[in-house]
Length: 192
Image (cartoon, rainbow, N blue to C red; front, side, top):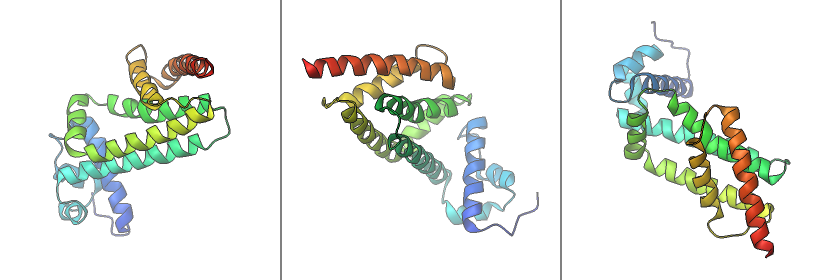
């Protein structure tokens, strides 16, 4: 493939990140080389090193971008006008369901999860705190001001992954049942 000299540095960075993510999902982080990514993008290997000093830095940049995208979508959802329970379901699916469906495409899920823990812990911890804050605000809007309720909903959303088909609609249907049940119970407790 001939190098494309018309791309801006931001375009090249995006193409590098897109290609690296696709290759990491397909072959795993360990089996994907910088040469593979350069070949996929159609640029020289040195061009990648202008933006990323290592494969670990590239993986961390992908994690940062995924986290930023997830947070942006979750913020749009949480500021919507639908009832708070609907927005809670959508935020949980955005944060848990969509992330799981992306990584589940890969036969290298264990390696990707280990790489996430080793190379991008801070990005995912920051995202977790931001999502918890959004959930707390939505729960408060639904009449629930209980300490730790945000963590309860995240744990339940993670548990819901284990109870059936994780395609978007089946997972969201199970989330709806779980969120409706927890909200009703917590609202009832708050009134008691």
